[in-house]
Image (cartoon, rainbow, N blue to C red; front, side, top):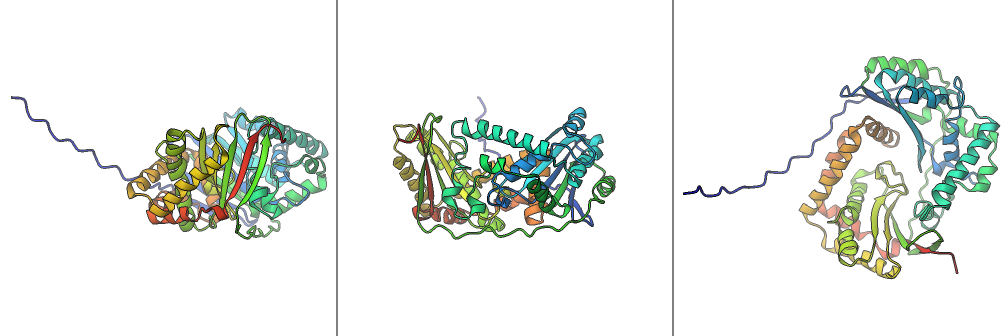
Length: 443
């Protein structure tokens, strides 16, 4: 007789791993904060420098200046001519880039580990003295203007919603202005503006240097001291508070996009100060519960059931990375929908799902599945030396805790269903900002 079938049970889910990256730090006499994290698993290194200056730091009349100055930092320095930074990095098989964010500007190189000292020299050289000349300034103004044309003015949904939402959501200039830059403001920039910006914000004490990868910690400490230690200490500006009153009633605006093939709408709510992860992380999880994956609340309802939307995303922060957000920061939902679906139908559906989550909550299983997906994605990101270097840099700069790179998975697991439900309950009609995008030109 055949043997009876054995009962099979699913194996228990593995506990999410907790990273344990080694971290060492030092602070030079000129104020430069340094974070070092050795990892001998592959012969590469990432060097990142984060300056505590971003779009919110720009003065009135100089919109886009932080981004413009990011470009200038690649135009030569104390000992290097124009393009030589690129030549040294790429000639050694490396990659490099820089980017401007709401609250910081960063630069990085990923190099073979034997080129670690070269990467440190390159970053120290431009921190010491970038080549601020009229030729470079004029050239980069033109480059930035062309970038705006390509990425915003001549692209469907260009600037939606990250450039178009702030003037509606916020009132203060620092939070609401066009961080990419107004052409008139860019063209009126002077050498004095550029040199003053460098002197004020690109001081060693206003930066974090992070080195991650196949390094000897003591050797790198010596190189850092040798290349950065003699950069003169300069006064570091005190970062002002950009906080402003919370909205007490709904704000609405409409923009037109003659290149957009279909309408879209973005909703934004202000959230608690991201510095307090206990109150902030439930909103990060909430965005995932609502919009990430086919099983998420809004994806399942609007894309699969009602077919009232063609694209849905939800995220914290204007640029989509919740871990580099400072106060004030929005919770954003972005919905693209067919022409035949009225925008009020989209808004009503979003309201229904958020209200249901705020009143009924979610199960422990739904939360665990969401956190597991978030954790897996996070671990993949920090597995690379560059992802780890950028994450550590932000945590060190904004919270003085690069160690959060190891602690974040555990903090996510501590988020409870009640916290997510409470966060959803704060996303009300009365406190939201709605930005509607309509195809075509204004009537």
